[in-house]
Length: 384
Ligand SMILES: [Zn+2]
Image (cartoon, rainbow, N blue to C red):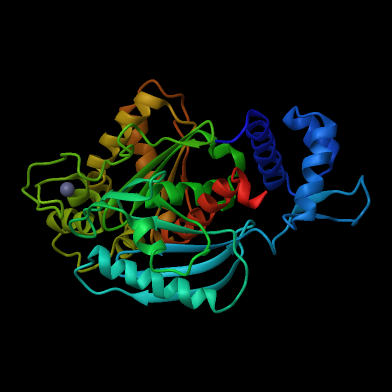
């Protein structure tokens, strides 16, 4: 049990580190005024952080020197469990990637096989003997991040209440860096928030990830909305049609069977027998010039637009970020969703809600896994 004094100091340290992360190199007096923390406390805390190597003074030993996060110190091993492979990278607090390892995955993706691939990747990374503040893992499933448990992961097979963090930790040497896990859509949104180039404007945003399935996450005042059962944003298996399309969850007609990669291709092809293309990116290319195909794409995405419109009506986010797996989709999908939403949400102003193209979901997922490590470490005694 930590004392009240320690708890308060940790809160201040976390606030100071978050401010320096957002602002970049800055002075102690700016931190004091922007965080509302007394100058003496800021000085005291920053001295400890500099001594531990977590902060750098731009002019060492000079009190008025600007201070910044040390990119030598703030590095994380970020792991992304994708549909066909697991990727591990070393990422710093600026989103710079230093090393990358990839391991292909066969089927079925049992929890045990994923654990052994992850352990192998961590062991590879640890051979570099570079210090990291923690290990972050983006998991395509419903996650209890606090307990490190994967409650379910329909697109990986039948996972139930799997203690992922514990199973990995017990296969690693004692004293290995702490592991945090995050739901993939949450990680992707955090990656976009810190590194997507939209800055703090994403503090109240809704994120939609388009891939084999449909991911969704939400930031409210800068905090990820998790929900009582950690299932906030699980829209992929909402009922959405009546064509009897089978879903990997065992049910029929889930949203992802219509608006996931294969679902969209199936919908467009059913309306247009001439389409021989096998990816949404190729169809998007055609839709740029061909209004008929564009209209078919708009109709194919209608089930998703319907579901998003309900979420918008409930929470009224400032903007929507869409993560597309191919850059060819970036110029057309956000616009299709934006137009569809404008038609459904009659209360929005003339411009409607901005729909922005986010980073590629693999990229943002990796970066977001690192963000979850940094966010945890900012308020963890071991690192400050
Ligand atoms: Zn389903």
